[in-house]
Length: 335
Image 1 (cartoon, rainbow, N blue to C red):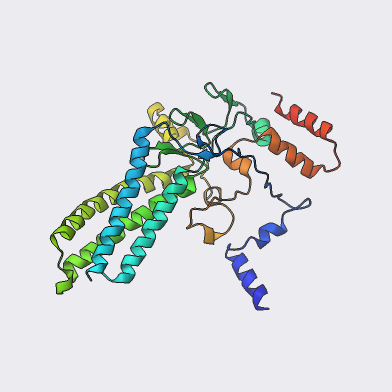
Image 2: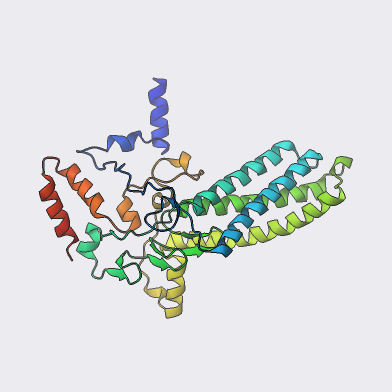
C-alpha cells in the first residue's frame, strides 16, 4: 500500500531506478555493463596504466587547485568567526559552511575524475561507422579520435567532448567530469552571493554591540568581500559559458575555432541533454558530486572498445562460441 505508492511517486519524479531496472535484461531495452575496465594500480597520473587520475605534470595548476581550497576554507573560517561574535545567526553560518563543503567536494571530484580520456583501443561506434563520412585519428595518441574530442598537451591524452583545460581544477573538463565541474561553479557562485548577503546584512542591519568587529576580524571581512566579488564575477562568466555550450552543443575550444574561421553560422551541433551530464540515476543525485550513470556510455563518450563490443555480443548471443564472436568483432573493427 504505502510502500508501493511511495515507490510510484519516486519513480514519477525521476528519483527511483525501478523503472530503469525493469527495462534491463536480455529482452529489455538496456543491459547493465558493470565490468571494471579500469586499471588496478594505485599510481597517480594520466596514462592508461595509472589507477588514480591526477595531473602531476603541471606545477602551476597544482598550486592554483590548492589555492581554491585555501580560499574556500578561509571564507568558511571567516563566516564561523562572525557567527561566534554574534554578527550573523548560527544557522546561516552553518548553511554557508555546508555550501563550502559541497563546493570543495565537487572540486576534488572534478580534479580526481578521468575527464573522458580516449583509450588506445577505442573504435568507432556502430552509428559512426554507418553514417559518419569521415573518421579522425589523433596523430599524437595514434588512436581513434571521436567527434568533438581534442588532444590536451598538459594531460597528454585525447579528451572526449573536451571543453577546456582548467588550471583551477588542474584537470581537463570533458564528458567524464562535466557534472562535477558544473556543480563546483554553482556552489562557488552560491557561496559568493551568500557571503555578500551575509556581510551586507551584518554591515547595514546589525547595530547591536555584538556586531562590532575586532581589528583582525575587520581585515578578514574586507579581504573576504573582495574575494567574494571576484568569485561572483568569475563564476558567473564561467556558468554562462558552460550553459551556452550545453545549449548549443559547442564546447569552448570548438567555439573559439569556429569564431576564428568565421563558421559559427554553419554549426549543426545539437544541444547536449542534461541526462548526458547528470546521468539517469534520478534527480536526487544531481546536487551531489557522484559519478553519473549514462543511458548509453558509448554514445556520450563518442567511442566504443572491442572489449565492450565483445560483452555486448555475448549478451545478445549467449549461445555463440568465443571464436565466432571474436571474428565478428574483428570484422567490426576493420576499416
